[in-house]
Length: 112
Length: 108
Image 1 (spheres, rainbow over the protein chains, first blue to last red):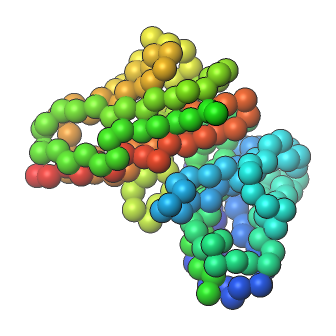
Image 2: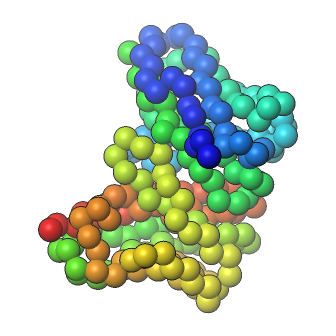
């Protein structure tokens, strides 16, 4: 059974640009969550989608957005990138909401 | 404010030296507590879910327990391959809140 796939693995962007990250969940999983991980703040919840609906959103500015498609694949977008957005962005999928999550390898975003 | 605190921040053990990691929480309405293991450069790997005080789960050298205020991850006779960062996460309403993690190093 294939795991959670995130693309791309690495990205370098310039301040002010925007970026889109992609996540393909485990087959059959309908819940996808996104997290930001940095050395200083640890793992922080961004948002969660279930059946194409955003169920919950963390405490991040509106520059961070996401969506989920009918096949459960998800994308997150960050607009007007700032240096502080440099982080490992992790996607996790679950069969149901609020159950154990299975994480992808992450996308390492560097903003210069 | 709801908080999840893990201790110690870092732990160094000799191979075979058993120990415990702690995850304490000050939340109302706990709906579940999760343990994950994270290796450098990788996403967290699910280990256990605990839902109610008194519950215990085991997997190989790891055993997780839960009380009303904290959870312990006991590591029995660890091996170097157990070296990783161990994260606990608490489900609060519909939010998954992670602790900062315990970085475990097991020396041969």
